[in-house]
Length: 309
Ligand SMILES: Nc1ncnc2c1ncn2[C@@H]1O[C@H](COP(=O)(O)OP(=O)(O)OP(=O)(O)O)[C@@H](O)[C@H]1O
Ligand SMILES: [Mg+2]
Image 1 (cartoon, helix red, strand yellow):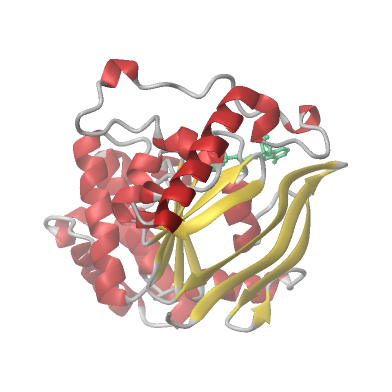
Image 2: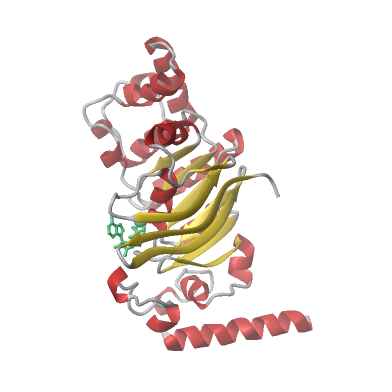
């Protein structure tokens, strides 16, 4: 496999005595799309904010985050600002909160070139228009003069992607970038991310609570439950031979051809708040019957595979 660009080792995020992210380890390779999936409260956003150095001050980070051989944990804010522009970019679920409402989108994208590359204002604007073109915004010269509220949700997300990719980061973290969009626009943004991975070689950590969405775009999938990584595997293996009961439970909630949509089971309950998890809390504590049922299924499947039928 290609070079490792991001290497997270035993990373934890604690809120007082409670671990919101619990000793997780994962790697992202150059040019790959790693999907991160799990229900609300599983720690997906905290994982990405930790990597970006943007965690709330009241949360304590430990472990190692190696980027290009450098440990980002404990790094100075000044150095981090440099990494955030040129090393790791991030896009969020709702671009309206990340964009400045009173500055044109062209100026906001060109700011990236002004700050990180020190080019002239005119040159920065030309580069910004090029970036808007690259993310398939129609009439980029004209749209560059628009304010964020004058664009649709899908177009605003494209502007965010243009900003994040302006400095050619090695890794792009996309935290639920399509959740607020309707299904057609969502599909267009997924296509765009895939295309940009091909053309720029940027690796993408793509986060969603939906395994269906994650599987459309990812090479590998990391499944999180209550702050822990329960499974990381190739996307095909996740579908064909899921190992962890939680992965299997998530899979059974995805509508698939030939399966009656009305009969799709939901996973009972929800991920408990941090202070109600207990030290060794797992998915088994939430749904013991489901846990045992899926554990048995995985065992049978693996026995069949060993026997070869
Ligand atoms: N700033 C914070 N202070 C205290 N607790 C937090 C903070 N941010 C997140 N948490 C808690 O940490 C846990 C993980 O949160 P996180 O936002 O990472 O979940 P998520 O997987 O991104 O969920 P969602 O799908 O809802 O975005 C949750 O229990 C959440 O309430
Ligand atoms: Mg989140």
